[in-house]
Image (cartoon, rainbow, N blue to C red; front, top):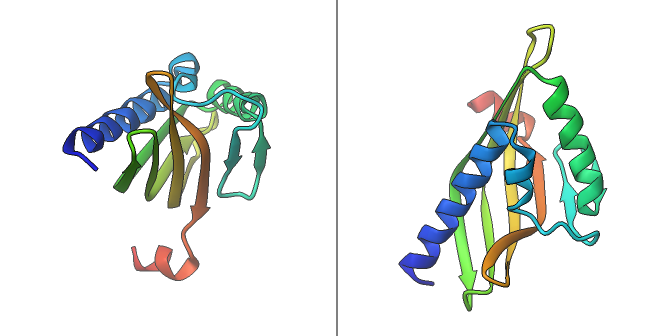
Length: 138
């Protein structure tokens, strides 16, 4: 695994996070494999089969919420033959609804990333919530 590969992954996930935080669905979408075989497992237990199902939920959230902020921390990347990568870290999502109520959640995240043509694409992602003991310790 080269230094260049790590830098590429860091830049990729920074761009993904920034597009999410600016609610730029078109740019955010460009980070993902938009095939019907894409899988998203979120912290609430929701499973989206196919990019379209995940995009519908995101579009509704982006339109409804006054503010969203996704943070990814302590990311550990493993790149294999410059064709496949995994990224494991922690996440925190802060949201403000139209009534001004703040909601925060966080936990662990895992991404499977594959090089398709010349671009990296997330082919599967999984978000799990913090355990109660871990949340109390923070």
